[in-house]
Image (cartoon, rainbow, N blue to C red):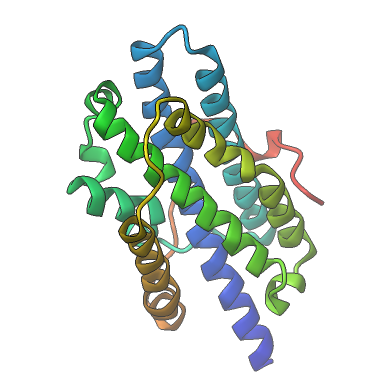
Amino acid sequence: MLLRFFRRRYLDVLGSIYIYNEHRGYTAIDRVLDAVRARSPDDTALIAAIEQHRADERKHYLMFRRWFERQGRMPLSVDRTFGHIDRFIEIMFRRKIDELDTQAVVDDDRLFEKLCRVIALTEQRGYRQVEILLAHPMVKSDPVLMKIFRMIQQDEPSHWAPYEGWLQAHGKREPTWWERRIDTFIHSELLFFKLPLLFLNPFVGRKSDWADSGGANASQLQAPA
């Protein structure tokens, strides 16, 4: 009984953090896409790659939404405190994602270079974390969740490719040791501090509505069965 409770709570917390990050991911990419289209309308390869990244993030969000719907409950009410890209942007640009002037960032090679490194590092971190989760006993106990993470694992490598490709094509540097250290710090902060606090806090409520309310219903997606 106790083991079942811990398993359910752990997966509940995990799913809630992931669905927040997937939604934050594709909505933030929307802004990047708009800015890149305005700046480089002829760079169809880059635009297409970012569009695919956006589509995958949206797909992952819908799969997690469907996972919650099948259980008859909403995700826990988590916010940007649990967002990896949120923290990375705040540290690197000294402002929240919603306060970032995306067009100004994309128009400035120096700032866009920084943004590309942040996105690439975030996606690479996500890939490594999914590999760990696929071997986690509690995750392995949920076949649907395993299918979701396998699909994320399959999609993830293409997500950092367009940003690394832009850096290489324009002769920009790779991430420095301190940028990688920031990424590690954010991940450790989430894993060893924020996640346990969320797990142990019985007063955290649940979302009252889906983040994409008014958008396509999750039932329109053929989620893993």
